[in-house]
Amino acid sequence: MKKPIVRKLRCAIYTRKSTEEGLDMEFNSLDAQREASSAYIASQRAEGWVELADQYDDGGFSGGTLERPALKRLLADIEAGRVDVVVVYKIDRLSRSLMDFAKLVEVFDRTGVTFVSVTQSFNTTTSMGRLTLNVLLSFAQFEREVIGERIRDKVAASRRRGMWMGGFVPMGYRVQDRKLVIHEPEAAVIRMIFERFLKIGSATTLARLLRAEDVRSHRGRVIDKGGLYRILRNRVYIGLAVHKSVAYPGEHSPIISQSLWDKAQSILRESPRTRACRSRASTPALLKGLLFGPNGRAMSPAHTRRGAKLYRYYVCQAALKGEISDAAIRRVSASAIEAAVVGQLRALLKSPEVVVATWRAAKSEGADFPETTVRDALGRLDPLWEELFPAEQARIVQLLVERIDLRLDGLELRLRTKGLGHVFQELGSIRDGFRSAA
Image (tube, rainbow, N blue to C red; front, side, top):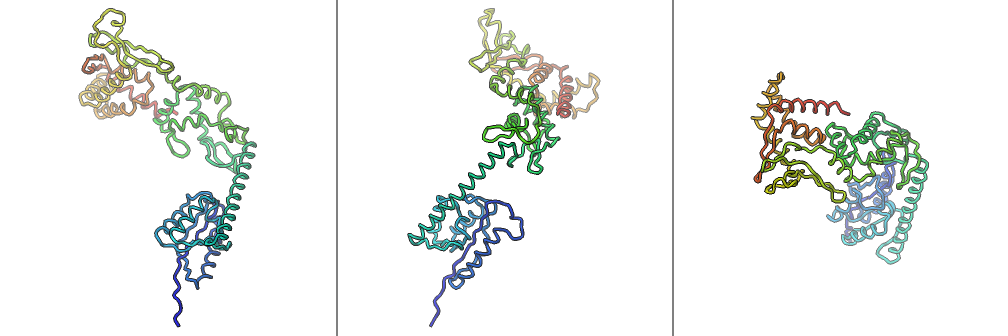
């Protein structure tokens, strides 16, 4: 009499642990779960059960989500038809969410995969087995939610006492014995940022300067405008511990004084648009005294406000005063004409003719530089331009440009030959200033 052929069932063992604590031990919780599951599979060898060599271990992942690398790999193998039985130590190792578990069961049913819990015996093909499964999962989800509430209550109580409870470590501090301690090299950068922000009053300008000076965060990233705002608004720097927008006295020492913090916050409370408008209104006009209209008459800077927004123009004053009535261009947008002039200047400074003229002008004033040095210095103006203060930009334009004639079909720039040598020296001093700043 022939023995009945037993179908081979490929068994995948899935293990999970919510935290990483103890995973570096020689024998940890994942090993214990796998050992118990392997023993169970061995006991079912007569039924054709065979353990797969692949290991599906999620260490340090919560059971309240399906976003787990080993679980995703297991589901992919199930969809590919490489698994017949999923073996876990307990149901809550696979999931602690009723909704997520329903999704997994749907995948198991669709692919014909059997689910087995080593310590909890039930049959999901019967109504009583499904009821038992739902009850067990309900308790697992309840346990997870209770644990979460306890952790949140503990964190809130600890923060009220000013204790550090982990997470992102702010620049300027290090964690020592579960407490924040000042890291002086980074703390000096934080103080410098607050002090310079008070002087400049603009986060945009300060971010440009910090980028030009290659000032980086403790993670090695360049401090951009967003990172700068996070630093300026972080109350940890005045010794406070913040939990859910409520601040408590912290155990750590402050990096900046309360007065410095208050001054910075008074600037931040003002609308950025208002600060920008005030800054533009007080900024010297880039083309003042240089721009002339098609009729040869000077065009002067002017501005007007509509609500909180500032609009800048260059206007033909003679036409406004009624001295002439045939002005072809009565006014032009300041930002548009200034951008066009700066664009032409950047292109001209790269031309061989201007490089040679600059070298000759510098040589006539006693400077002894090779032509390549002059070309490199003028080439630095292009990337350096956006980092300059408006006053510095205006000074360089005044040195370079003798006259700008605005015509109906474009612009005509007349450069100052003598000013080219001065610009060469200006670029050198500005470059040295950026290197020695901070």
